[in-house]
Length: 460
Image (cartoon, rainbow, N blue to C red; front, side, top):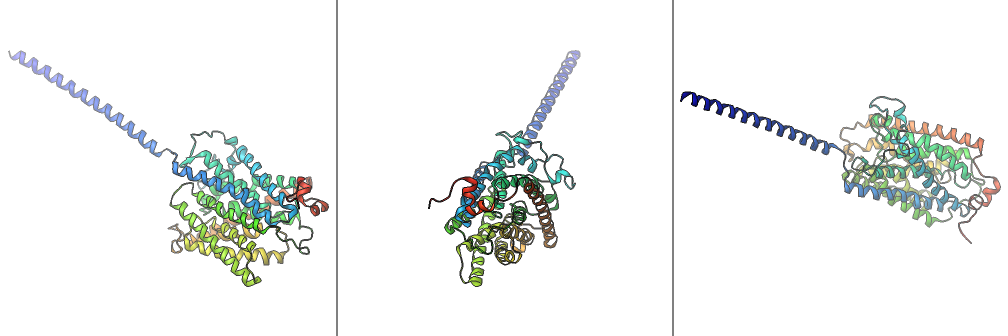
């Protein structure tokens, strides 16, 4: 009897132990599955995903920035030239939209944003320009993500910047350059100046300006100083328009210029607010400060012109608006409303002096004030970005040290001036030797519309 009881107890213990073992094994399996599920959830949360709101806003921003070139800049510049040259300016802007799109797809996006070989805090070749690993947009699919938007939308947004920047330059040598020379110059300049400066500023850790801590939210160095310096070099090397300084050369269609400037003003919201790459508070503030700076510049330019010349002009108001838009561009992601007023005031004052007194004193023929507005306005904005980012002026950079930040901003300005200037000089020198830069005296006299494109802008 005792042996039977003992056997039963032994069997019960064995069964109980086996049950415990099975429960422990199942618990371990459950824990392992739970850990795997949690890891997968964390990975999914960390992985980039497309935000529909951000994407919708950025698609609109792409359209707004392209609208700045076609038709905004084309009409703004077109109204400022003489009747016989309007189509040449429109055609140059159209050419930029076509050619720069193809360059961006073939190698431009890769040279600007490819990050192979970049190391944070280390200066090497890839700190200055991207590699060619993503030529022809290699690897881009509908599922590719950049931040919270499809990479295809990011590619398109940045493409619109690459289109408008060389289009800005054409205003400096309007009415006398060969169409073929203009095309060759802008191709070389975009490749050797725009793409490297873009890479230095915006491609992330390991890029020169990025590691320096330069604040350039939407393109003070990349777009405006870069293009402005190229415009100054080009207008000097191409030479003055025949009759410049002795023959009146007034704008042929002021309403067209004002309409074009108005389109630029509207499109610039995509330019600046879109550079946040998201529909958030920073984009909203960028929108606001863009409006404030531009409005301030219009008022200040008109007042200066009223005092200096007796009458405020429509062309002056349009030019003042563009000066304000240019100057707020690098600061639009960090400045507050007070900073925007400061930048708008300073840009109108300094750009007015540059486009009138300085240009007259130095005697260069910057046809449509590319350097006076974009180059000088970009420099004013880039430097003041280091000031207006401070919280006491309403800026959003909490730990900014104004002195050191201004020095950093100036360093980026100097590099951009030298880089763009050297590229422009070398490119224009070679092109002049190979095919020549400007049209003949007879062609210039007849007008580029007829001699370069075989048509006229007006029938009467």
